[in-house]
Image 1 (cartoon, one colour):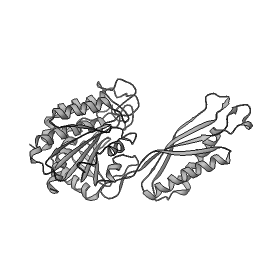
Image 2: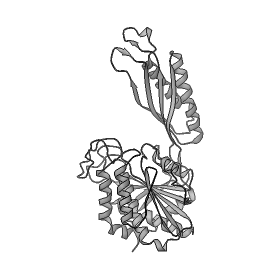
Image 3: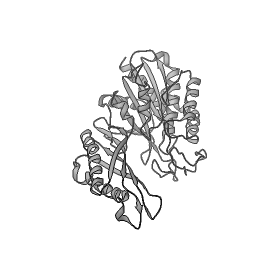
Image 4: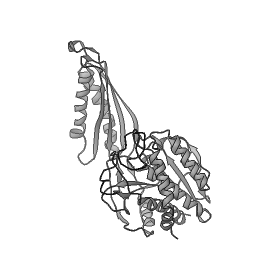
Length: 391
């Protein structure tokens, strides 16, 4: 029986695990329910899990070369309107990006690998990670030793995605940037408040913020190389408490994304310079703070080709590969990939049915559970085969 057939036989357990994460959705770094559940299941499967920062790790195998398998498991801070019977009941968290699938698939991959541990030609290390959506989880686990003792020689992660591609399709990039960098920033503007009837006595931070917003758009329109892909979005503008009060301060929060290191470095510098200079023109001050930064995701070409080859060995119905995929979204697995040769692959989760035509991060998003055994099988089989080829 191959790994896909074995994973299909565990379909009920896969669904049970996925639905637990879905119904008990948690966000951010601290995920006590998910962490406890992962540790409980890994112990049931015969592994010896341990906490690694705010995440969970475990190791099995025979020593030698090590491959790291990673799954994120955090949700988004939003209500769920999927209509599913196991929707998260809080109204404040929802698994609208599929990370509940990732955690469930890696749990079953761990079970499959544990069953054949005696025949492994090396070591498999598991990484159950929080806070991918806030780009904090990988960094947290790196700081707590996920890449040490044993140090991985390769790393692999999958990400499910809803859409019109059939179940079984997979998307990858073995020749360039797969996902953009992201830098989350906060521009803190200091003005001088006054009565709204006497604006000449103020230094209006709202006016300054508006001009900073406009000036930042010119960094993309007039300073960025058109051959680069650069995005700059202000998603939050916070200021004031009443209609007739000019406040002392205002805050702009946004994200910056690029597909090239040099473009990113230029924008990092220019956002600070332009914000400070624009505030000075209107008599105020502006400080720019980058609160989180993740580099571009560039997969290792040789490893990605190997992983795709291993995936093709399994008789998955409808399996079809789509190379050279690039996305303007960002992924903190990039922090692993800049330290360890890594592969990252999208798995199509299709749409659940005619009600489910909604993208990821939409409150009505639905993912088809048919992808669960496919992802679990790909993880387990790829780990086995890579260790065989690199023993």
